[in-house]
Image 1 (cartoon, rainbow, N blue to C red):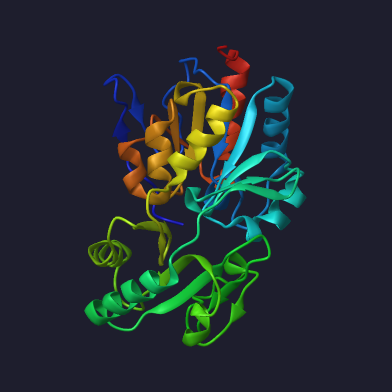
Image 2: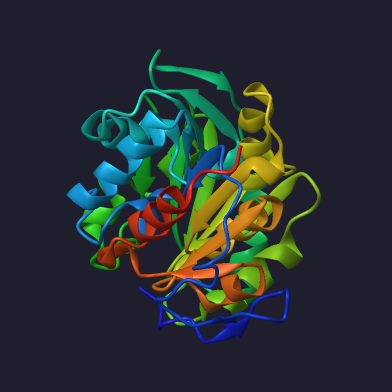
Length: 298
């Protein structure tokens, strides 16, 4: 969890936006689709959805409002969460590189990462910043999360399920993304160094504390979400999006109404229309209850 996000002023210049509060308590928001990040947003710190949040999601369904999960996790590692949630809709996974039909258990679209290019980038980055701890997600719905010794930072539950392998074994199979950690470098510095090592065919995202990801170029949470939203005949202005990390910024910037979590990274305040309470304080539910109580704008 990051330090509480600071106060900010709403882009309209009329509403103060304080961490743990909502900025639009008296303003009705257009809502035909709700997009939520998973970790740090929809899920509590113990990787559960609270009863209050479950009830808010049920109210969405009763109003005919779509709910789309948009997560950095690959589809192969999301299936247990979707099963526990009873989630059967379309999900944007892998930071936007996958669209997964949870009800049918199949990928509608996906993109792999060039292993040779990824390995070259990792080697260049290590030359610049020193030894790295690495992980990869192998391709496909039966893909594995492979980590090198030392990658774990005591966050086994967040990473699970995973297998520990030596560094050479990371490159034995097709992959969807690479995860990078550095033992002393600050996250922002590692992001900057990684970005300087990649070309247009790869993307660098800051996905979590001490987690920087290398992904296929041209994809982010906004591109994946736009694909799903379009399939419903909707547009960005119909969407409310919730997120907590810099990898959520493209999605929040694209959506008609952007909600940052109070437990999130402070960079999100630049694009958020309001700050919801933290994920452990039912922040998603608090905002959705207000919007639904005010009456949905068609």
